[in-house]
Length: 472
Image 1: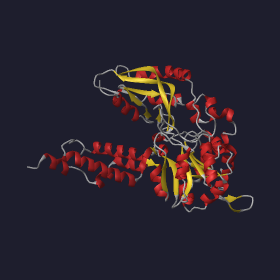
Image 2: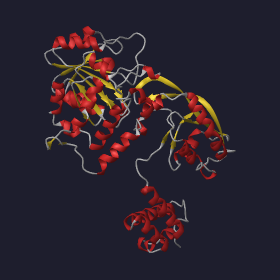
Image 3: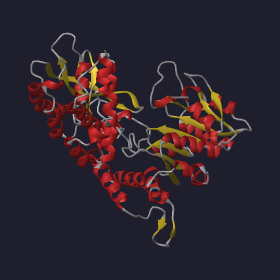
Image 4: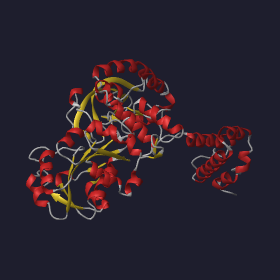
């Protein structure tokens, strides 16, 4: 007598029979035959595995198979990456796409994507142009640089500068600035890949000007300073200011390159935020080149910007690596639109999402929370308690690492023992537009600092129903 596993496996229909069912034909009309056939094979494979494992002996029925096929199809049809609500309290969240773009940048990208444009074409002369021409003057006007060029991120900017100016030569950097950022990106590793030799200067906590002077030799190609944007050394510590390093670099006939990381174009203090060195001030202090990101405090798309001495920028642009690291037309369009916003600094915090989020008033967030609580409380009635709590947000992505911003969150705490914030977090991640919060002391916190669309989040809350709540 055949075993249960074998009998269930034998009952599985063929791919062709499933494709011939009436309901399958409707799916083919909606999704296409190729996609449906792939989904049918996936559903049959799952049914076979479930039967052999004696997990589910009902998957062989036509309805159950087609339910599985439909789930496969809808999952495959979802866009990726997906839009989510960032309610983590980390404003510039690397895992969630960093800085959101302003509408003018989104419109500029859409316009650039629609058809042909003068990306590398000079409309005046009718000859080939440079894609850097669309951004260079904007960057120079905002930073005081002689010239500028743009690549696909700041790591690429650092790599390109090192490879262009210090190939097979030495670069002096303070031990306290040999940072590692997300994704295990380390300054020593990028120097090795760029073909340079790292010369460590000073100690982890204290580096003095004479340490740099002693490190300079006939093989030294540059002095480099790295802004430790993702950590702070406090206590018995010392570092050398950019203007002092600039004097030494000029005396030695070497370029001073400063990697600012997040790179702010404006003084943040009048907006109520902590001081962050600006690109203009850094260049004015004597740096020959400054590298910084476009998608952090600047509030634009992912990009790495190199600004400073025209002679050095020209040398960098001649490096064959520049073509491999260049940005596309969409990035140029978006970054140009964002840079133009800086021409009106009085309205910058209002028009640039990243600065608007960083400067939001907790009173505004409290009022928003009070409007959201009744809806969410009703949806989770008897399952979880929803309250308004004070919390602290972070800037994120290595920007202002020790600073915290007073904020307001919805705290969602399960009533049942054994339940926790992790289960509720999964529920909110499963919404049509996933809502990403953070877990604290067994509760799910939804920090409202980065929430712009009140009506849309309410529509997501209405999808939080009994069928996707954790059990009591």
